[in-house]
Image 1 (tube, rainbow, N blue to C red):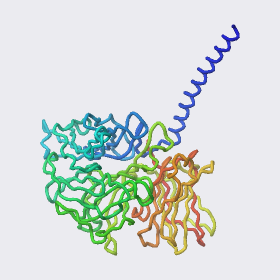
Image 2: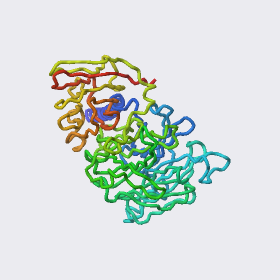
Image 3: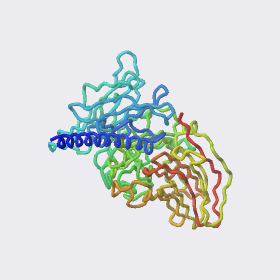
Image 4: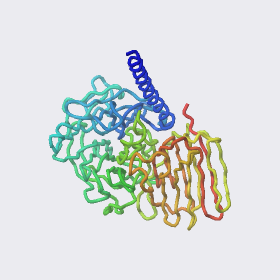
Length: 529
């Protein structure tokens, strides 16, 4: 009997020890995950799930970001509006949840505007209202087979975005019988003295106008037979912008879709045109834009649902943009547990009219990055002989997960440039440019953890080069788990995430050209403290 009791005691102690070990291992794994994967300067939620950026506005020195958030789990779930603020666009302060779901539905994507003239008549004691419009998603009605489970509603803040009150007259736009009817984006139309709003409706964009932000009228629709339509249109944006170097103004319609992107899964295309207060008309070069086209805000796999800030103090030829740095093909499967997803770095958009009368929307890192960039090394010209590898940066010289590089490469007829970002474990992220094919590529097939999804690294990503300059200008922004590539001053952009087994330590450049030459090399380390 004593032996049995001792044996049972041993089993109990072993079980308790095993449970403690499991707890300790889980805790250690979370610590390792935080150290290895949590970004240094990309907004990332403190915990659990995040997707689309929402409701972005600038007010009294602060940039506000709201975002699709499931606070109770690390996969998609009942949507709330999370909230964060920043003064420099690279160091963020996460705030309490701004808008909660209620009996009318989850709080899907939308936008926010500052209403300085109180056109909404929502101010009570002379405050400046900030008005948000979002989509109510009634999951119960959807489950019961309804086609009208999405409608548009507003909430407003009278304390600079800290707290929000839902409008008692919600919804302000009832569903007209369209299953996918969501993601309203508002903009003040100064020329026609009205508010204009665009929202996504399955395979097209719908334009609404209002004088007071609460009463809306359908003005027109666009896009049913133009551009990419491999999936549902989502998360539009619509704004005027001056063409660089001229007084000409065009309107930009940013339109995300999933699936159907240039490299598969989620992506964001754009249209350039004119708006007469009612109807959007694309420029001549886009009037019959086919499904396979080159007007993408980002050709990489991981920049989706991006929109721009309202009420910024940028000049009329710039617009500040932020995207969700993931892809619906694998967003819920990436190898992080404590949190899922980050945002891209903020980017300044500007419009250029090309020699062939086409218009291209360029993207560059927001200028605030200069204030946190410490110059580590600069060199006018770096040369290597044929077949040599050139080390551009390594961890002995600079923190590779806070890296910014700028340089130029000569574009030769048969020159192929390959960059290799690697570590001591053999993980390797390759990217570069093929001159004969005139396209860029990213290969993350050996970048570390890739087996969590069949689509994450099944094939390379590509992007056509639109520019024809003899020098290829390159800017690289590197964090722990992301790379953002800005080619030709941002005419072509690629953003992708990756998950190495240990930190990346070296960035090399190789080419079979007779003389490998890099011009105007600048290596920066981002200073975040």
